[in-house]
Amino acid sequence: MDKILNFIKDKKLIKPGEVIGVGVSGGIDSMCLLHFLNANKQVLDIDVVAIHVNHGIREEAEAESRFVLQKCKEMGVRTYKFSIDAPKLAKERSLSIESAAREGRYGVFEALIKKDIVDKIALAHHQSDQAETILMHIFRGSGLAGARGMEPMRDNIYIRPMLPVSKEEIAEYAAINNIEYVEDASNADNSYSRNFIRNVIMKNVLQKWPNAIEAINNFAKTVCEDDDYIKAHLNLNSLLVDDKIVQMPCGYFNSSSAIYSRVVFKALEILGVKKDIERKHIEMIKDLAFAENGKKIKLPNDVTVSKEYDFLTFVNTFVEKPTLGNALEIGEFSAKNLGRVVVNRVSTKKERDAKALYFDQRKVPKQARWRYREEGDVFEKFGGGTKKLKAFLIDRKVPVRVRDFIPVLACGNEVYVIAGIEVSEKVRVDDDVPTCYRLTVEKR
Image (cartoon, rainbow, N blue to C red):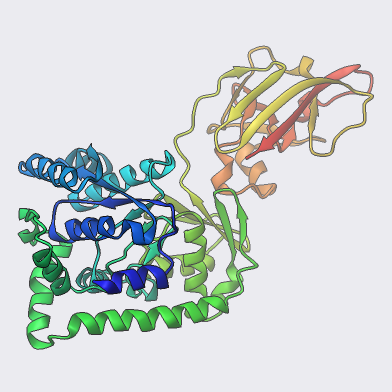
């Protein structure tokens, strides 16, 4: 197991002085990782704590929680215990139990990181887990990104010190150090994808090719080297990034799939998406690049991709629009997914800011309210000519993803002000008016 220390040093997984939270289920892998890091905490100059999550799936889970707490107490390791309702989460989010448990578990980890309780999370994945993960990614249609397998460190938070260690080495370590552990009965349930690969596919493969796990891991290392080399030579300067929006020029799709697929993955990575994207999604995105303007598709992880002229725009799916309903008055209000809308009174003789909108508040009906656009809305263009609001926004090349989230000042279906875009001819400021209203949008 000394190779773990060498791996930690080589991959720079841990810095001196850090608090390492170990995800502990009570199984042999996590109990050995906890024991090893705790036994070497002085060598690594770290503090070690245990994190145990009861997923609420099995009746024996509570007994396993008590086991973990007792063993951690015997080792002198501080423990954080949490309970989540994975079946409920799966139902609410239309996920498999397996995915819901993972989401809930990582939610706990992220909360501990955000609260500065731990600096990193150590996970007990080993060589066999890596091989199973690679096969699972390939079967789901992943490209090289999936064939890389699990990274030694992800997001500078999640570390896997045992990736170079075999299952046999872990069992030997447990025996030598008299490490007690519990067997998870659900590991025999082949309805779970990973269990099916482990208990059925890998079991048969290993009978024919005993070195299969090592071979798959070596394959992943080669894939990583090739993938890293190609990525190092990518030109990503054309990606436009603004908060939670990434725009990718459609011209990328005139190149090799080896290029544009990696640019797509980079765009998604910027949005925080690093899983569940398969080859079929890349092809859908490519087709969208050659589709007509305004078309869009939805991807896993709440990401929408829209065709906007010469660009594909990747964005986190907008949440449900809140209700505005504000009357016109001096002050400010927040518009979800747009920014802060500020209205104040100014002199008409004052030099006007090109980024602001000016309108005569006296011409706005008292019944007018700020809201989001609705079916049937019309707008009289500055200078004359009435159009449907939708058509006007298309003419102004306002992206589809933005149109429904721009506040408009309207009475009935008559729109007088489109925040950040234009004011209607009906509220034009005449030269003889001493004051008017000035509107600005401070975008996120």
